[in-house]
Each structure stands twice: as C-alpha cells, then as structure tokens.
Image (cartoon, rainbow, N blue to C red; front, side, top):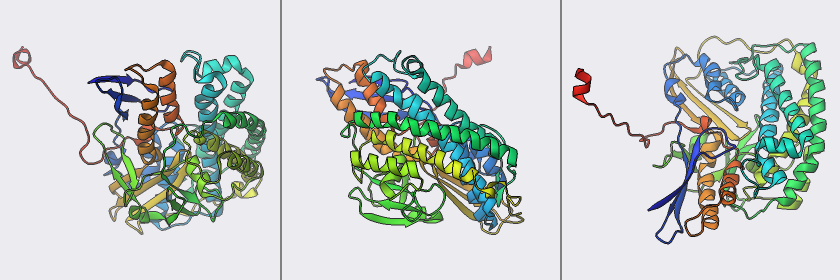
Length: 460
C-alpha cells in the first residue's frame, strides 16, 4: 500500500501529520489526522494539592494558559464552596478577554489570512506571516499591536504575560489599580479601532469563503447566557445537526452528554455526544447557538455573517469569520469592562478554609471551544482524579473527516500537489487546533515501547 504523508502540518499549535493511504489505482483509500505528541497532565495532577491546579494547568500550553487557569479556579470555587465577589468575577472576565484578543488576532491575521490575502495557490515560502508582511506591512504591524494588547491585559490582571497566576479559589489574588486600568483602557481603545477597521478585511475573506469546502454535518455545543454570547456565564447548550435543541447542562451534568474515546492512529482523544452523534465546539458553534453578541459592532458583524452564510452554518471555513466576530466582541467588551469601576474594587476574593465538596467542575468557553476541568479530591484536598476535556478533542472527529474529504478531491493518480496539501491544511487550520492542550491519555493508547538489549555490549 502506498502512503502519502503531510509532515508536519503547518501554522497550527503543536505537532501533527496527515497520513493518506492509496489503493492500487492511486486513489485515496483512507486518510487521517494524526497527532504525534502526548502530554500527561491528567495523570501527574493526581496526588497534587488541588489549590496547585490553577498554577500547574496553565503549563499545558503557552497559547491557552488563561483558559486553563480560569477553568481550574472555577472548579476550585465549587470544591471550597465559595462564590467570587463581583470584582473577582470581573477580573477573571477581563483576564479571559485578554486571552481572546491575543489568541483570535494571532490565528486570524497570522495563520488564516495568508491563505486568502496571498492566495492558497501561492508557494509555502510565500504563504505565511512573512509573506503577509511583504504584501500588507501595515496589517501585519496592526496585528502585532493588537496581540500586544492581549498580552498586556494578561500581565496586568494575571500577574504574568504567559502563564497567569492570580485566579485562586474564591476569586483573584491580584488587585488592578487605577494606573494599570487607565493604561489598558487606552490600549484596548486603539485595538478596538483596529478591529473595527479590520472588519473590511474579514468581509473580503468572507466573500472569498467557499461554504462547501470541507463541510462536515454535525451538532454543536457551547455556552450561552439566555441567547447572548458568553464565555463564563449561563449553561452549555447542545443542538443537533438539524438545529434541534438536545438539552443543556452545567457542572457534572456534562457526563450525560459527552463520551470520550480514542482511535488507534492518534494520541488525540475524540469526543461524541452520548447516543452517537458527533458535534463541534468553538466560534462556529457559539455563533450557531446565540441570538446576539451583545456589543454594537459585533452585533452588526453577526448580521452580515448570517446574511452571507445563513442562520445555522455547517461550513468549516466559516470558523475563520466567526472567530473574527468574537475578536471584535472581545475588544468591545474589554473596553466596557475597563470603563467600569468594578474592576478596581478592593474585594477581589472570598477567603477559603476547608474542602466543602469533594468534586468540582469548571466549564468555560476557551477561544477554541468548550473547556472542562473536573477534579475529585480527598477530604484533605489532594487530587484523586482529574479529567480535562478540551475543544480540539471535541472537534477531532470533524477535523479527521474533513482531512479525508479534501484528500479525496485533491489526490489524483497517487500525486498530491503543494496546492492540494495546503487545501488539506486549510481545513485543519480553520479549527485553530491546540494539540498541546488536547493530547492526554485515555484507556489503551497506541503506544508501544520496544527495547532491544545486547547483553554482550552491556557486559563490556
């Protein structure tokens, strides 16, 4: 059997490859998205003091540390039986907004945009962020400026620009003073202006989007607060592929809806809804679930998006535009929050004492989709069991099937061109997968270690 390999897959976080098996006629027999890295956070968190979890879990990834940090702290709120005060909740929200601004700007401008602004037929050497600098240096400069805003929010609110450390059980350990608030307000104001101007580019990309490209029919899942976009308030809504409402859940109820499993070709877990239907999470899912974004420019952008794609969207490439609308929303919402005196309040946390509940589940909408942290602890607060469900695991089925669908269309007579390779990668990149977050052990993993020992050499 002949096999074609795309290794590595480019412009994503982490290490992955695509394996395409061909039959005797040179046509695609099967194709898979294979993740080749493994990280064991679910295992080595066991035995740790649970209050260390918000400090350990951000190390899962340098792109998504804030999401893990906040989701972990939310799980601890339940374990210690506390509700953060309004300022504590507002600071956590601001911290997450910094994550959204940084992450969405990175993906849209630097990972996705080159395929559209330079062209997916261009060579790999031209179709990248350096190529973007050449064709549109002003856009590249603004993208860097916006990402800087996200990092400065993380640094000011989270204590550090990469792995924040201030979300604790009961709220936040760090107070935001007026000077930092004023500086952040000015930065976000500038970023919002860039985001509003950039909608013209997003609109151009939207017009170039092939809505039939790598379209996978699935259900969707994501947080919604009574029909308004939210990443931390409300409940997780579940809808079917025909837009039928399946249900909603909070906390430990996720086990009534989500089933995890593994496949032999990848270290990346898969998820499906109990009952067998597959679903997706992330920007596309969230926009399919809400009625409104809740900020002026983002709501106008949502109207244009729906005029182009419809009210309920299955197109994979629409993820890129949905992500931009969320980026625009995050800039608007951050400016609103920084204009509210609540973020500089003195009471940032409720003190905790002893474990009140031996299990806590934190659920938040990370930039890439629904993130779940589930901890079971001893009476003394030592982690006995940990389960992490991240967005890329939940999108893994759709990514994998999209890869095969595109491969069948671009491989001819056993040949895969550079243009065809990029079309396969575009289907993967649309999900903005984060593989460091998503690779965890489950059951019997496809790992075999073979040691061949020469006893004579050992004796020497």
